[in-house]
Length: 329
Ligand SMILES: Nc1ncnc2c1ncn2[C@@H]1O[C@H](COP(=O)(O)OP(=O)(O)OP(=O)(O)O)[C@@H](O)[C@H]1O
Ligand SMILES: [Mg+2]
Image (cartoon, rainbow, N blue to C red):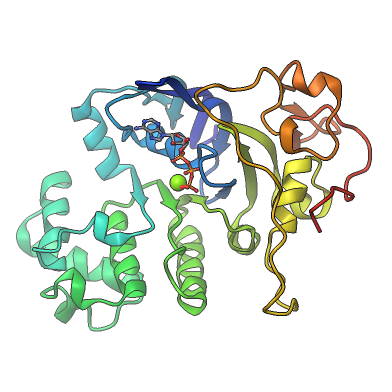
């Protein structure tokens, strides 16, 4: 049994302009110790999918479908049940650690509070555990750091503190939403190496949300690609890079900056704009931008189906060769 099993997950937001269909019929599972990469352009529904799994949707949002953690349904639990679950069995870290850290409390105090609250630990036991967690994320001089405030840490260090906080209660699942986007490349590599190490040491399952396919290539086992609030392709990481089958994935791969490209060269981007999630087209949301579009693509959304009967899934009617989309290199 998968650690996390998401079935037919939908998220709608009620707005003055009508319902925003932010997430539509997502099916995905994550195994213990596995890293699932989630990629897609801005606004494709990456964050809302996983915020709904965490029970952290904005007030005007409503999730439907099923999310099972270790076989137990967790979607739309009460706030009380959710906060217990979030502290103990799953954690989430964000692009900007300052959104989750309290600037007025020392790091040690914040960590101890989590432990005293969720694990009922004594102050002394909590301090000891906090030091262990800081050491696990390779923060040196951990004991001394406990009395420091978040702003006294550099950006990369703050992200490590966030990860240490999330690890305090040994969660089975860690959801990371653009954890390295705000960091420079060297620090980004260190954080990715750290996540990889945690997965190996503690068997933590990791969901890594990013718009950066380079990040996914480094650490993910499997990747799900989202567009317009839908999954449009899902595959084992090497399959996705070497044998992608969706025109949008081709576009995304074309957008990966090439290290050997001259600095002045403009990055290839996919022409056109993402769909308006408040008034979705009847057919494939990518149809207006797709270089391979056919009449039927505008009539009905292609279902997410297995390619070659395997674990590689895609939602596209086009069966011919890829690699010749205009505006995409
Ligand atoms: N509270 C809300 N009310 C209405 N619409 C919302 C709300 N929160 C999010 N949305 C919409 O849901 C859609 C999906 O947003 P989401 O945050 O999941 O995108 P994303 O893929 O994470 O993008 P990014 O890469 O920019 O983080 C967007 O169109 C967004 O405007
Ligand atoms: Mg997001």
